[in-house]
Length: 275
Image (cartoon, one colour):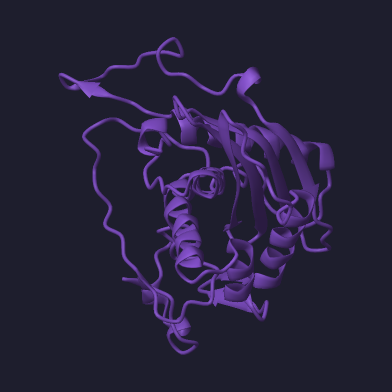
């Protein structure tokens, strides 16, 4: 059993797995007093390999999409609801992890400011436009938030990501160009998974066998990308996988902003939008 415990329960090590699983649920940064997270490891019938960001992408997709749904249900701005759930910006202690909510609030605000969060987007006769936001804390030492702009075709309902702003606090950025490279590559990798990452199985085997039938994001599909490095005097944190987890929920939330339709499965297939 893994929970979001009281201060007294935090001292009980049996509440936590050795590696903090399930990532993105166990270390949910929001002030939600009644939250319980369980997981049961299962052996996959198909061979699997490492995924960039490991457990985070699926759980962060569910969490950050649901936060947006809560914002819709309560008629609140998705950014403002996240900031409200992180107040007063205190440090959340979960076992050995210390999550600084103020650092997450800062990257959310930085991404929103640079990403023109409050600036309206105008639909065109051919396409519906919208913005989405999502955030995550990676292993308690790297904080990231993303704002994306997408459009959805009115006819064939294809999803295009036109712009992405990624704000990151990874502690002291010793090599800013390296941070930018990891953010851009991580986002692109996550976008491939969010829009195209689908494997089919037939007769006990995978149908796709190479990049000829398993597409990834190409240069002409890549958005205009901008990294905002938030100044920090904290020790350097890991940066290689940080950008991946918020990508799918940010895009899905932008699709909702554009169309009013929720997509709760990845990859975000256009037919799931159903305009």
